View 1: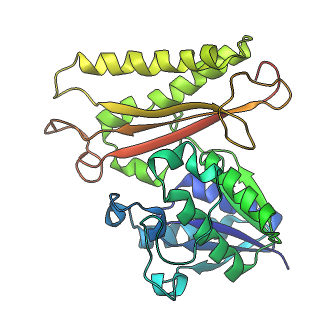
View 2: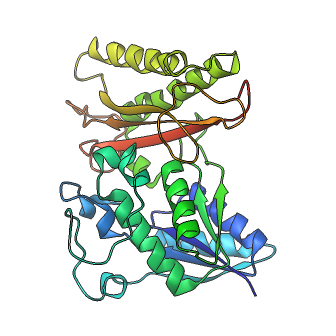
View 3: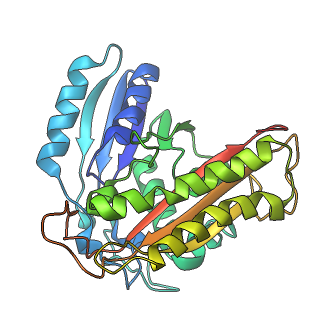
Length: 310
């Protein structure tokens, strides 16, 4: 019997379900974990605001399980924090107290620059889950590209007996990467939030037509984000949805170190992150997200550049 593990923090969507489908197609049993891990939230991040939709999650899993043709969803593991962190209360400070898994320097790059404890928490909780379940395979989405690189490194460095399987990103109809946090985006912020996807596609197109230097590729992405930012600045507060670009990156696919030139054989990871800011003025009658569009929402996405011309 083989077991495939799909770790989640709940608030399930089609992206999670695609992981479960692939796991079921490659294993006899699928274990799904639902646990909002406190150690990957910084001290200034609102852990309590993370969406929790247990009843809907269970309904989605039951519906999906009825249509699986090979493996089945055999267990949902939803541990308490006391189970996951038995010796000490979870600590999100640095250096912190407790037992942690640090994958450096990978965890300090990209997302790690602005969220310094995030990947320490991710690696730690994944190590715990892998040890508890001992699956033959574990499944993660391509959207969280830095996470996938870190988990692969952890499995290799610690000689863990599991295979890391990466599943393509599931997207909304307009291309926005599916995320549990998308529920916080009302109609106005939702329309502007697609700017990150458009910026990455513009950079990918620059690579496809023969651009290989960092400056040329990222310039195409920055042109898109800058243009959208200026458009929003010209609008009155009742109409605009402002955002901040955290980073746009062109990096080595294994080390995630920034590259000056894309190697035709090795390719590169083109990625970015933006923060959708709370609306300055919320209008009556417009479609609002959870929390009335007052919750900042971080959006991440990536494109893999492989081979000459993408």
